[in-house]
Image (cartoon, rainbow, N blue to C red; front, top):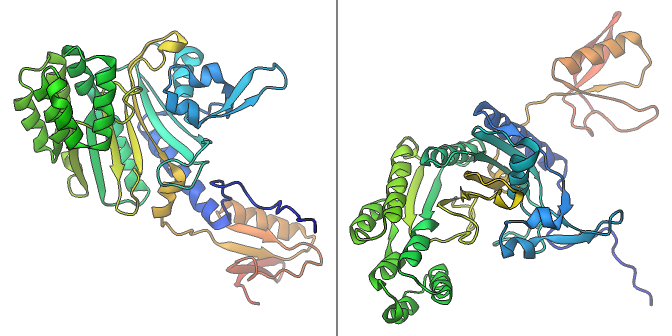
Length: 391
């Protein structure tokens, strides 16, 4: 017996977005892009595919593994379907725009991953985010974090846990202690797994061991920053500055304290080979994975010939929309299939007033209620008027 392939099935991790969900998704996308615009962030729309040399230049090995690769039938060159839009924005900042002053960009678009990320089963998230280029100070990090929190608030998320780290602290300590690349990688792996027994076992092999032992336990509420400043008092000036910047960020977020709790984790090395400074992630009780994340990635555009400081955040719009409960207030009107100048004028008038008007197709048996219409147009003298829809 010949088995017929189920041609309607989608690949694992790829889903349709059906009308009601699509309506909410688009409403949230517009709301967030309007929010970004009100802060001065300019919208950019990079292409879905690029040559891999451009798409992966300056990025981590992890991004390479996430990227689908295809052959360009015109040039024969290898192309990639974007798995992250940040490298594309870096290319735009370096070449297509190349302005000298501080620049703010935002974006929203589908990305494609070879495997599901974190606990999500979606391999085609809609990435939305904002980035600042050309400003190295902590004020840019603060602005990006504040914008991220407003983004989550606009999405309907009211209770957020914000985790803040700083990858430069470990990097600068490793540099000062002259750790070998092997030991640095070993420590990195230990911190990622939060394995304190392994850290204790490795301690005897480490120069300045007290620094690295401390990093393994310096996580908790915001008081951790002060503890770190005491424990790492003999650390390089760059480490002290990083801790001071973290303190500045916490102080700048005090007005969010009613619905945002903050924790500090100095062994959080998310994106260690990509980020260069502050890193942060927002969590919500509805999911184990972060709901939004970001950080500083200075000189991300260096591979494109232009080294500029940069910081930003991104989120999956499909994840955010799960908490977006704003009701659709659009009123639907059913109009009959009648060729009439007066009816056509009435339909046009209602559409300009914000109504959705669906005109019946000739001999179609679909009713107003089938289409979800609350109203229908009925003749009245020489005009047409709205009447509650009936079966």
